[in-house]
Length: 524
Image 1 (cartoon, helix red, strand yellow):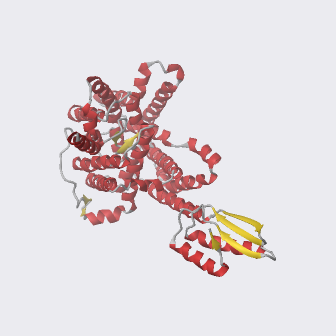
Image 2 (cartoon, one colour; image 1 turned 30 degrees about the vertical axis):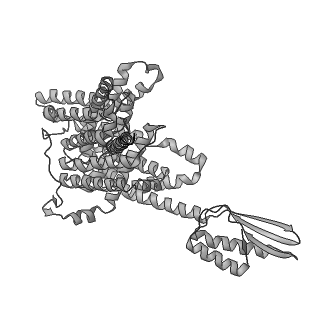
Image 3 (cartoon, helix red, strand yellow; image 1 turned 60 degrees about the horizontal axis):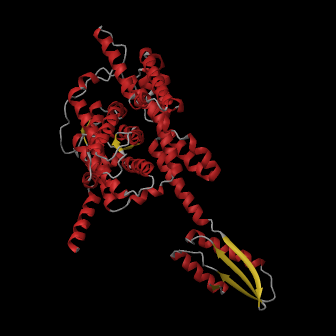
């Protein structure tokens, strides 16, 4: 009996570190068929998205596809939440563009660093750190990023080419280049946006819920738009006309596997690893935070009543980015839209990611010559319609009703991210959160009671929160104030009731000792 228990113990521990073992134990043909359908469905959605996000990151389209391969294969082995789809996201693509400066070598290095740090976080069980980033800050940051991303794609819709550093400079550049708008790109881009929104909204209507083809149209809407616009572009090209700005040549075939370059070249200069770290600064921290937060938030949405192993999820995410860097992938995380599609297909295990990755590999092998004709306006339309739903208007009213102070970090993060850059917005939001934490620790709630017993007057002070050093002086001042008002001819006894206090620090302890000497306080 002991040997059997030991075997099961080893098997359980191994399955915890390699969740794919648990899924394969009782993997049936029907589950495999369902996963195959889910994997192909997500793949059809992922291919045009990854090409669009590569363009957003300032990289050639194949790098978006490379990133999709790593996400599907690695998470299938190490991931624990069956619905989660790992791959490129709009927010991480924007951050990659900002910090990698359109350099594939720096992009791969960014993936390597973020992956290594995530693995370290997972093994040391440091996932709790993200709990210090409040929901209002996440909402403000995500909404600001969505606005920045959408505004950055307006130039693609209008057929313009320029570079901008933030939200404000984007509109300044649009104003400067207003005379060079390509109206053919504009018409195509607006048509694509209208088509994508219409398909999405019609499929949401209860009247059409029972129409299965609308469900599949909603899932494949990006692919439909890309295919139609590409066919139109190719048809016009055969007649010698190129009215749209095209994606251009894409490197076909499978990615080469190589170790990330720790001394990449940019321009005519060669940078050391320390130079890269120094240049990126807080950018690396920002990307790591977004990678982890995005994954945990998406996973929590779908696990419902199940318990999530956050450390294992972070390790899986870290390995995905680390191994992805060997094929030139950009940083990836969980995608809510693709995970929702996985869920709607009733996916059974994370092994569906393998089928998604295989579909991407087939696209790299056989379809890359046709990607040349994809209009950039169509890709910009896909990005805009994807991120516009990330703007969280719906959280404002609940915040206002529950605690109006929560609007301050949300609004502070949103405004500072738009005006000064999204990484500064995150810093601003975190600082506001820290100020609020200190404020709530300082705002000590003290109940004061007075009563007489056996010809002695008692003045009882009962603090309700933990007394940390910012609140110690407040307690002392409150007691001084009440004692000065306490008039009595009887013996006066001051009582400090610490029954509700769970913790105090050294500074508070020293303050209490001094108060005992000064007031001769009896503590209960």
